[in-house]
Length: 308
Image (cartoon, rainbow, N blue to C red; front, top):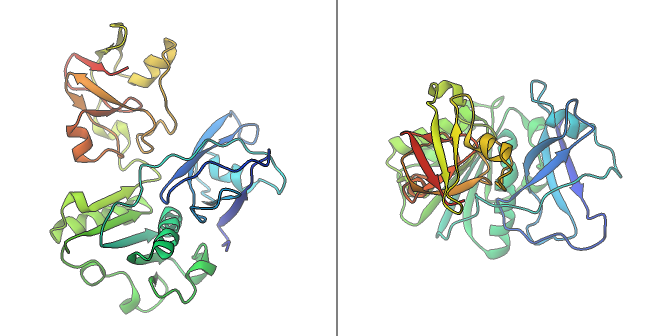
């Protein structure tokens, strides 16, 4: 199940009690403390095992040589090590649909593998398109061998078997949901092509492992005031700070995890003011409903009021 660059870890509860239940698409926080220079470090990894298994959580982690240290630390773990983790959270769960089309690039297969397992159990209609460099780079290969609903697309094989979205996605089909996960360029290719083919945004679901664009690429932000509705307290957010930075510095109990705008843990509601959204987790509908990520998004005006 492992590859030269991917390690698969089975985590079991140290106290013997069952883990919390989760649905396909969920992820956990993993605390990597002394294993990372300058730690502690928290990283999010999708659960790719059987969603109904409360005795064991499974994650698969790609070793990134140029990473911020998390993947290298995971690859140094040994059998028997104790690893603090969070309860599962899910911003990428399966939506009710007659059919699901799943597109995975590389290690992006992890949440989609859990979805495939769940759909196999429930009898759902789906196809998983899994793109990898070669057969030796296929993570969780035992699950996909001769699976009738899984199509492998390998870069080192003939062109006709590679992913062709006009063939493999095609024109929009009613009551069909599309899920995408993988490296940024792969996701952009799938999502942009889906848009060109006329797929509505409501049918497209994505989860990124890194922001589509760094906050710095969006241009400098202005300073503004953030007001907390529960107390009326106001704080100034300087151009080089995030709302989350300011809240935590002032002792506000503000949830957070990835601090990159991709996990959704810090989302709160805007009660007044206009948001400058810089996340890559909220849908257009959620933004329209007033959802806001404190870890990276800002105010377009001079102030913003949050439901905190």
